[in-house]
Length: 128
Image (tube, rainbow, N blue to C red; front, side):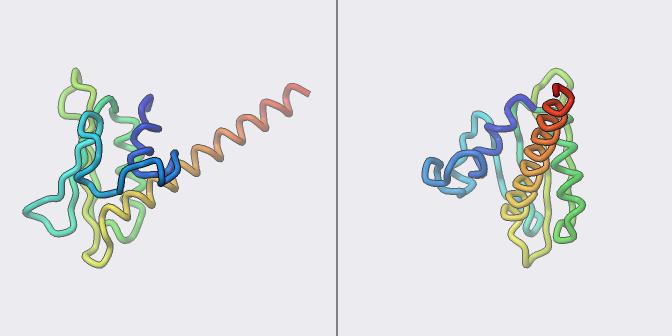
């Protein structure tokens, strides 16, 4: 998850929205993240995230799957020697799939920030 902050930046969670491009899928930096809507399935998006693997893929797919608005979420690592993860996400027709992904990423980010804060507090208490 070494580039997860970079991934979150593309969805406007780490840096202020004014400093980032619009959230339109077509404007994302394809060197790191490639997004495309499915032409055969309704409200489905395919993400390819470079320099990531099972850790980020599993967290995203599982957390998306827990949301009742999500109809399908799965990830795969195309090849063990290739540092990339592919994620496929589908949502109910009344839920924009990209919004679902953004909301889930925000929840994951908040969970990690809480975990980091808990670790810092625990470390501070043990140092006393």
